[in-house]
Amino acid sequence: MLFSKHKSDSGNNLSDSEYKRITLSALNKKLESNEFVKFSTGGYIQSKRFYIFITNTRVHLIKKNNDKKFYIHSIGFENIKAIDTSLGILYGMIKLQIDSKKILIKNIKKDHTERFADILCDQISGYETKTYNVFKLKYNDNVLQTLEDLKKNGIISDEDYDAQKSEILAS
Image (cartoon, rainbow, N blue to C red):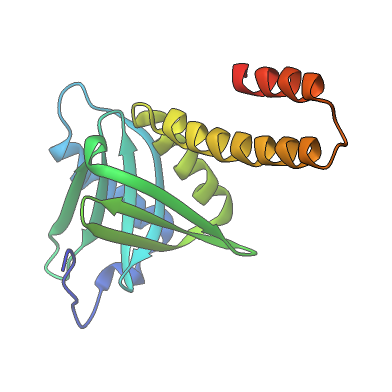
């Protein structure tokens, strides 16, 4: 298990701004000299309050322990295999696939959920391209199947079919 459970979490008694301030202070001690924060948000992992920071090189998950120490888990972008988001009315959820493990971050403000995913996708080299190419391939397969059906049923000519197919495959 990536995160162990504790009976109480003193971090839950702090305001959002105070929690962010103390976790950022802990993060500053861990940042490399060329590393800087691009985005941060709060959320819950296994019912424990965490602050999540995206830097230019990795993601940091930080939780304040009861003994005034901090638990910091850092994830390099190269280890993130998939990102999935789910949105509710006010809050969202992000699921990160890290190698064989999944991290579920809940109760993130809705606008932060979308922004978190966008920034993280931008940081992961080629992530958007891979996702887009998979979508484009599926879309083109569906359109080509429709064109074939139209041709088989005599709705479009062989010439129209060939012209449309060439245009789709060129895009």
